[in-house]
Image (cartoon, rainbow, N blue to C red; front, side):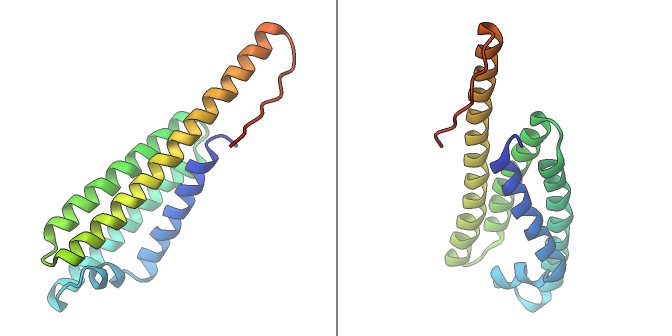
Length: 144
């Protein structure tokens, strides 16, 4: 299966989406929200769940590499955006740091998976091209 690491990260994100539906209060708790803000953060967590499940569906089930790549770029941009927006609302420096560390780390993991998958896809395409040109069977060996 092509883009295996990206699909794995999309599966992990889909798992988080499920967690958002089961325990939406986790977001407000993590952000140390006041009780009067908790309902808003619960709703935001559910919105994150819907969004992440939709993006992950394309990342997991996408038939073309382009679909998977697009889902990954959307996911990465959402991670960065979530970090910026949530960190701006945090009153406490420790909470702000936690938010940025979590969202930007997740974005970085998605970016790393995408870059590794792209490199593997280029190698595989080069091997197929070589085999087609030379008329020989070339075994694709991935040292990674």
